[in-house]
Length: 391
Image 1 (tube, rainbow, N blue to C red):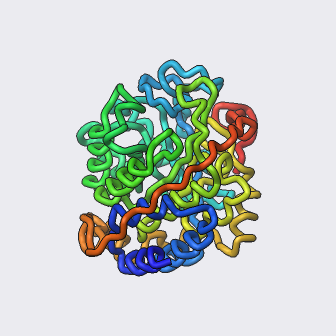
Image 2: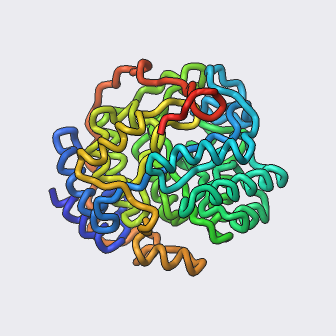
Image 3: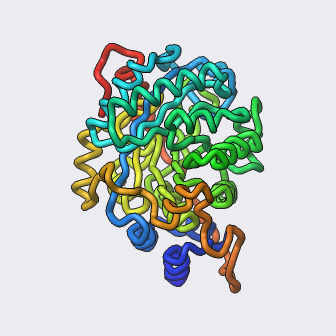
């Protein structure tokens, strides 16, 4: 397929595909999905070999969020029967993090529901970061606390945070349909604050919210322009009790095409398969490791994930290896840029490049996937409970 040959060549050169090429990847047929995976896999292996980075979520504060994000089980007005609790103490969070590290996680992601942290919250998280790093040598810590105010990113960095996550989630054009209590621009601003403070920026998307192919390409191109070091790709978990509970728009094949498109647009960044992989990729999860070089281990914030041992077995059976703490995740050019406080920008800039762009193929008409509500399990173990975590 000439399209895939072109995309592989561009990915190996860190050159941005055209929008038409990205749309054409999403429009490929299910019959061609293995060819798409094989092509994007060449780009993935060029920059990350066969390594898989494991990340572990610690939900510091669950539920009761004042924001109205339609996809979220913790949103204002959510009727999802999730765990609700206030801030974990630093030693509790450190103990939770240790379970993930023992399971092979290289990065611990500290998440708290809410619009954004107060200065007191930043101090609290700073103490938690210190406790985790004292107990777990070499572990990376990423904070995800919502919208940041001026100076907060710098304080998190000084407390030992390595990265900050804040997802764009969907395209700017449709963002107002998903959330009304803050704006797309607010999210962009927080990613830029993290970047400017010298934190490794982490920002991604949620697929399956009823968006169009154009929306998916828009948000991924926006992410390329923001230049985060890692891009989590979430697949909507349609929680009962949320506005998007009836949105079952994804098939395993479409999830693979989305991941491939992200890899072609962001060839040298850490692409992470995040929430919803078990629900939507299902038995095709191992194929996705040829596209993404990073996953979450065990459970998510409010939903249960695949057993940690099953994750490790899947990685080994697919011919991949868990990335150790002594290995630098990012390619040398990006790691050097981050260490120098600069941006790991891609060669050729972030605008469209190349002439003779092919027209996007017309998307095939797909049947609506069956709802798999049996695969959506609310988390009832780990932090906030008396039960052992899944790691």
